[in-house]
Length: 182
Image 1: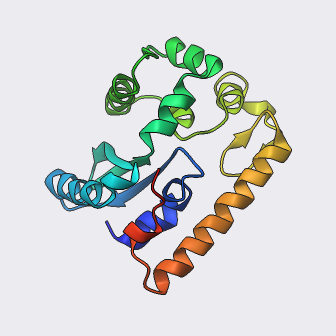
Image 2: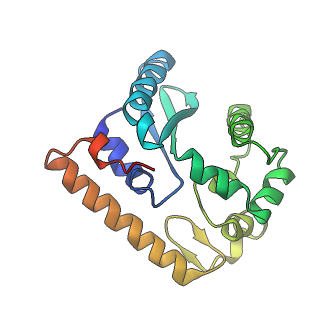
Image 3: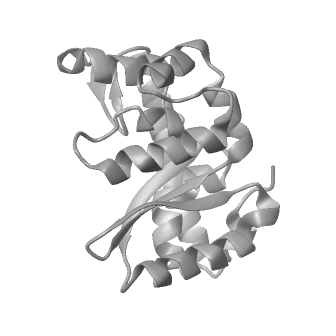
C-alpha cells in the first residue's frame, strides 16, 4: 500500500476535515495487509489517525482510515444512532460498532449502507440512501438527500484537499508531515 494511494484516497481525513475514508487495494496475502497497516498505524498514531482492515477477499483489502475522536462524535448523533440501532449496532462504543461493521462485511450479502455514517456522511443522507434511494437530490462523493449546497461545498473542499495534498506529496512532503495532528 503506497503512500500515494493513501494520500489520493484519504487526504481529507489526513487534513482533519473529514471523519474517515475508505479504499481498496491489492495485497499478496492477509498477512502482508496486516503488516502494511501496522506500519502505517505506527507512522500516524501520534496524529490522531487510525487504519483498519475492514475486509480481505481475493487479494484485495478494504482499508478504513479514520479519526477516532471525530467518529465518536458522529456516532452520537441521534439520527445516526437510530440508524445504527436499526442494523443491530450498539451506539455506546465506537470500537464495538466497528467490530459489528466488520462482521456485517464478512457475512457477505447486501453491502452495509450504514457505512456512510462511519465515513462522516450526513445522517440524513445515509438515511435517505437506505430508506428512499431513488429520490436523491444530487450525486457527488455520496448521494445527497438533505442540504445540497452544503454537500457541494464539502465535495469541493475534499477535491481541493486531495489535489493540494497530492501536489505537496509529489514535491517530497511525507505522509507524516501532511497529516494534521488533532
